[in-house]
Image (cartoon, rainbow, N blue to C red; front, side):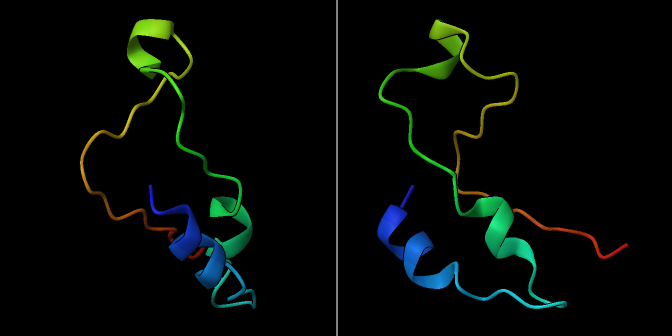
Amino acid sequence: LNEKKLENNADHISALQSWGPELRNFRKLKRRPIVSGDCDIVIDKPTFIMKIDA
């Protein structure tokens, strides 16, 4: 997770760019989430996250 890049781009907040608030709090975990049972969904490859407009 490139936290600096996320922080620099999370200010795009408007009706058509509403991904900022959802992704603003993403953080890289200090330990492996599968082993520790921290998450129910784990993304371990470069991934595009899309928000479908309702």
